[in-house]
Length: 247
Length: 270
Ligand SMILES: Nc1ncnc2c1ncn2[C@@H]1O[C@H](COP(=O)(O)OP(=O)(O)OP(=O)(O)O)[C@@H](O)[C@H]1O
Ligand SMILES: [Mg+2]
Image 1 (cartoon, rainbow over the protein chains, first blue to last red):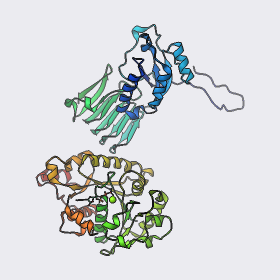
Image 2 (cartoon, protein in one colour; image 1 turned 30 degrees about the vertical axis):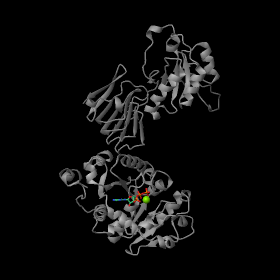
Image 3 (tube, rainbow over the protein chains, first blue to last red; image 1 turned 90 degrees about the vertical axis):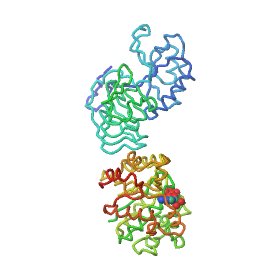
Image 4 (cartoon, each protein chain N blue to C red; image 1 turned 180 degrees about the vertical axis):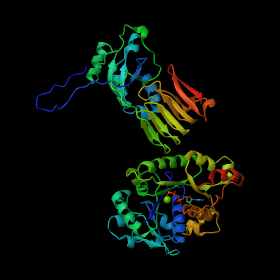
């Protein structure tokens, strides 16, 4: 889709088109019942409000349309906007669904898989930031080093790996596109692979986290087994399941 | 140049004003010219605890608005001539405080004083953020309970990001923990967090533990900073705090006797 900029002689171009690819969370509804969707979505948002707030989101209807149940796209878009999500596209929709979306300025994104290729559809249990593909020009990942405690109410974001040499307090949130290392106690929220890197890992010397997440697959404090608490662990993804392992 | 100390907490009613009065008096008694400023516009009570409420003519807001000079507004303490109080206004609203105004007042004070103690209001609104913005040192006053500790942690985050030092990329504000209203008996019963618990959560240099004490209420009822009550446990604890802040090495007191062994280990080093 890359377009060569048109140069008028003797004039600097005022703009230029380039193509880019980026990762964006994909919402895959399994029901057309918007009340149920709203309820479950709200629960997920509550677990990681900062992660979802004003997040762009792609609506993927391939799964749902296989079940020949029809989702009211206009209402669905309204719901997402109400929850402070910003739908940026629809894919796998039927013609009328695409038209309904377009009427609300949401474009159709061509589906990677055809609706007929049902057997290869990947089942995602979670609202996962799904990597669309590798960025064309991968930037040099930057490791961010934090030497001071990350206190309640503070957020730290790293475009590459994140290394925290101090504690992360309850009520704090650390996020990295790559791996996260915490050499103090991890009490707050830690989200690694936040742009969808399922290979990202979290390492910490004392796990007491409120929430841990890798590429959108998360566990909240309540779900953490006693056997992994209060000790050095690493956390990684295996088939979209979070594995917590002693170090 | 004065050292500006903010006494802050996040949560209300934990002992900030009690602490501000005590340490300001303690520093002044050691011969350092000290001013203590009440930033709690609308709810002033530092002047009550300092026992100078009947001598208030002008206040911080008057000085900021240019309605009075700093010298007119500063009240000299009757017990210690190195100590001055700048009261808060009871009648103005918080919007009267501006960052430029406060900056100018502190700059002027800094020329003449050794220490400026800022008694912050509770919360994270304007008065509180202004009190801490210019600080060099922060005394984070915390009670041994979860909500107070959590709010202190929040405050520490704001101190680390929203201060003049942070904005100018200077050396960060020095943060000290002051654990107040500590009651070893209630810690033992599990009703309160222990010093270790709080230390573990906040990981902050402990400047002192002030026990829960009747002497504090008695002192504030009679307008005498509790540090002047030399026989009281709280008074002695504040005296230790001032000494430690000035670099003296004093062992921690008024903590459960049983835990001394551990404490030695934990808090020996400064
Ligand atoms: N060590 C102590 N022992 C007993 N009572 C105390 C102690 N410290 C403070 N108090 C009491 O707690 C109450 C609140 O104290 P103080 O006014 O100093 O808190 P503050 O943090 O300034 O409150 P605010 O947030 O409202 O400004 C007062 O009644 C005071 O007497
Ligand atoms: Mg007060």
